[in-house]
Image 1 (cartoon, one colour):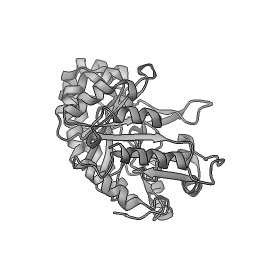
Image 2 (cartoon, helix red, strand yellow; image 1 turned 60 degrees about the vertical axis):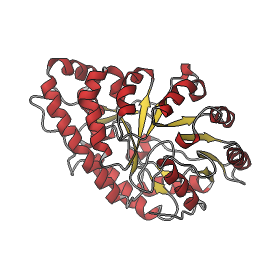
Image 3 (cartoon, one colour; image 1 turned 30 degrees about the vertical axis):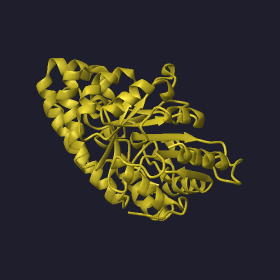
Length: 356
């Protein structure tokens, strides 16, 4: 475990606060992750990055851009500086043989081409060690472990595993029909999909020399930590979710010590009972539609989740976070925001300490 980072001088304090959160406690205030331009860097224009760059750019160029961007960023409160090396949302399917495609004119969006025509005759679903995408991502993690060491961490990749993986390699519409037409073949396909997660988790952690694992939203844990997900849950009912998805998520959770769940859109709310009853899932990171107006307009639902024993991840402007803090349980909330200046970020952190 790294307790000091060049771009996070208060790393040790942040680790203690994250550990307290997972234990249902707080140290002076709840978890608050806030970024801002570092003092003197207000005019700096970040390089950012794209999925296209992740797939095609020289790896040292990618990592050095990330280091430069991080050097101009204030990682306030409990936000941990880390690089996200994902090749795209369907990357796990690509490691299993799917072709990755980009839309012309958009380097930030990609998808894989489904390749399973019939589960009965398809080759076993697995990551092949000679797959070029797999070798690419391992190379990024290995080099990152060298260049970023002592400066910033690396997040885990985009874990669209379990039934999301089946949807990627078969196509969402086809998979929906398969669930009805040949559920016994889906049972077998899910066994293969579930066997992939341990390989992903262990080999990425090894390549990146990662004690800490996390991804998206600035989540962190001194032990294995990740956001699990199943976006395909939006198109299936509770019975199918409990049959195929929940057991897979709970099995993945055996490898991940601290689990947050990426809960995407109102169609997935039908699985609230299954997710809140699972002891393996610690925090629910619900992603509202733009029409829902953000987390600040969902306080009754968020508070209900907390009353059912779950932590919640919320985002908004600094003023919206202050409003939410009046309602939400500070021991069960992760707040995420950004500020225009470092002074504004530090002022928000002081406000939380005074008002908790």
